[in-house]
Image 1 (cartoon, rainbow, N blue to C red):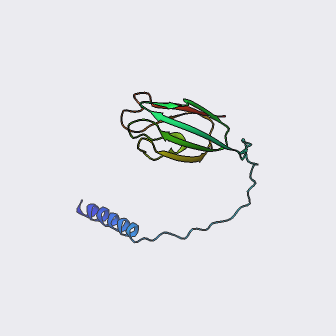
Image 2: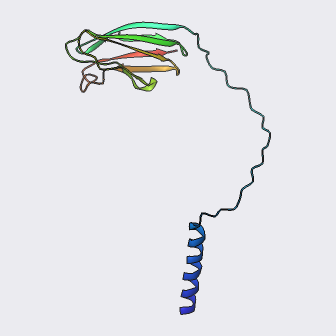
Image 3: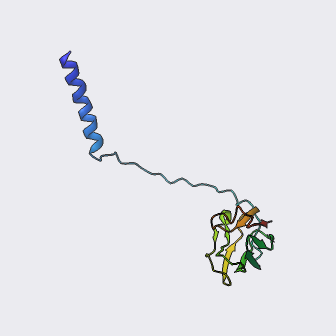
Length: 139
């Protein structure tokens, strides 16, 4: 019985040492030609710049809806006409404006790279919950 335990422990130690040595057998990579399918067609950028002025107050945006085409460059000048700090965000499109004081403006520019209807909002705590939201539709 002792001989079996010694053999098992010895074999286990051997395998642990071999793994810890960093040794791995060389691998050969063979390049094989591949045929790629043509890319799926998707709407191509119109190259247009769509500009909007959006104002924020307590606790609303004006206008409440915007519409653009997929691929458009979108420029939004956000002006804080309220009496508290506000900002302009669209999470799904990676748009994050600066938090600005009353009377200030901030400009965000992005490419509308996915179709859908997305919510824009003020991320100051409780402002979104109080209705400071709007929607942008990317067609």
